[in-house]
Image (cartoon, rainbow, N blue to C red):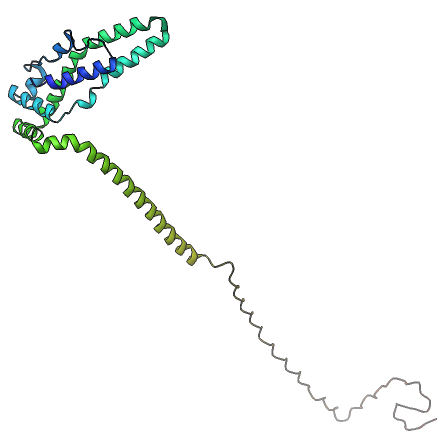
Length: 247
């Protein structure tokens, strides 16, 4: 059956984590192999029964839900730890009851498979789903599924190295360009400052032209010339009055 393998694998993971004695027996894992019905509801909206069958085959081929196998075991372990911390004297009873109830929920793993099939059926045609399943069941497809994670890890490693190199080189180139730009815009503080140009001397003022002396006017005819009064020198025998006599 289409869902038998992933559900059995899920039950194995659950049994291993829970460390149950005799987990392989009983009706738990056996119930997990039951195939869900496809008629009615959302399944009818997604396509025909053959369409859903092709979708489930594709989901199973690509291991689309494998990553969710750990959900129920992790929830059981977390619940067990929490309850034991609160009631350490009931550790055995808590472990037994949690494990029993967890195994009863394993059959609900098929609900996730059904929802995954519906999601693929809404996006891909029946023909495309058959082609997907055929490829991943081929040698190349199986190789991709088994070794794809290895390639992904190598790709992530290469991407990180590339990222670091690009970031480093980008920072270096930006730093060089900024240094050149700043050096051009900012003068060197150690360089001798340029001498400031001497201020221009003001133009010499032109000497003032001497005042033009007007000739003394001649006395009018018939008028008496006023005597020239000279100061008294106080020297004996000297008459500056022009009398020409001396004492």
